[in-house]
Each structure stands twice: as C-alpha cells, then as structure tokens.
Length: 126
Image (cartoon, rainbow, N blue to C red):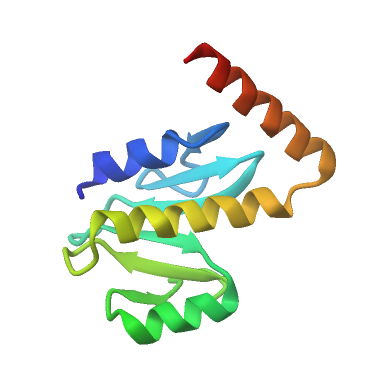
C-alpha cells in the first residue's frame, strides 16, 4: 500500500474530510470534525496514526512490530502503524475502519443522524 492508496481509502469513508491543520506535511482525516487518521508525508517510511480501543491497541503492539504507540498522540488511544509490508493491506484497512468506527461511535446523536443520512444518500446514488 502506498500513500495515495491509503489516502484514498480514508477518503472513501462516509463524510470524511482531509486537511492539514498542524503543518503542510501531515494529512489529517476527520469525520464530523474529529480526527481518526493522520499520515505524515515527511518521513522516509510511510506510517499512519490511528485511533484504537485501548485494550486492542496493546494487543496489536504486542502482536505486530509495525504497530507502535502513537507518536505525538495519546498513547493509550492511538497507534502509529508502519506501512512497511509486514502487515497486509487488509490488516491496515481494518485498522483504519476500526479508527473511523470508534470516532463515529463517540459522536452525539445529532451528529450520528447526520452521518447516517449522508450514508443513505450515498447508497441511494449507487
């Protein structure tokens, strides 16, 4: 998986926006204004910071050397995942999905309803 494939996967999720609020070299992906993925563009090795359930975060770190505590993030809730070929594309996209889903679950009722309406519109267009 390369940076563009990872970027497009993040953007394929419902109501996701992309921005660079911290600097010109860190892509930030948000749903309803809340971050779920960050991709630094200035590093030699591709990585992505993803939100994660605290218990699962520890399990993933113990199981995969490519999964480390979130760099510059709350290490209880964020992992940095190196996209170095040691994890399959499917494993990486599942981690992106988990991060996105955690953020969606944390939204208030009104925000979730708006998101569900966006999803219904997207599905009806297909």
